[in-house]
Image 1: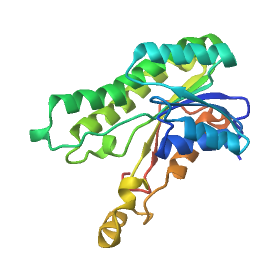
Image 2: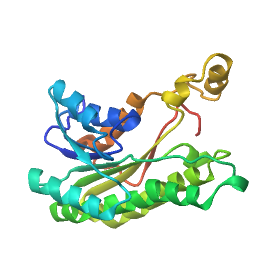
Image 3: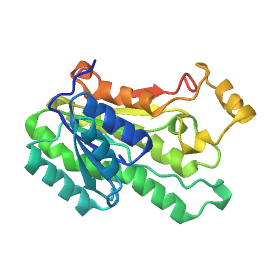
Length: 246
């Protein structure tokens, strides 16, 4: 079992779905997990972790607010002395066909999914560089690799995360900081649970492993990249898609 004991990790978008699963699994592996989301939305995640004997905090964070990001990072360092892992998971969709997509739908998705990752990463880099250690993991998507109709904004933001991460990985590798991406495929969610019968079979037929993935599948990949076992891996995209895109 991968050991994250003593590591201090910030997970954005930790209120539900993949983010909640990442935070929960990291805590079960011994990490101190700072669960970040808007308002008090991550409180339930932190409480559930604590109920199981893990160590977690709930942080109010709007990832589009740079001042709030700096405050969260500075507060975490004051309380815990360092940040070992940043998981950039917060993200949104505003799906629409290109001909009908409004500029606001483009802007808000890029700001939340890509620009916020820039801001969060920049905020943790200085203390990581000072300590000459750190893990930065961003959650992209298979859509950022293969595209999807009606998701030009989302695909652009998720593809941007890949290029961004590779560039930053080259910049900070000499300081023993790794920067990687996890790109999930079709993952079980409130939306996919509504897909039943023939439609679900049609989706599954596009996946060589024959099933839709789970948030736990993604969380396991994140925990691996956050661990000491992944110390020689940087600038990579770990696809968790059941073979949907190869």
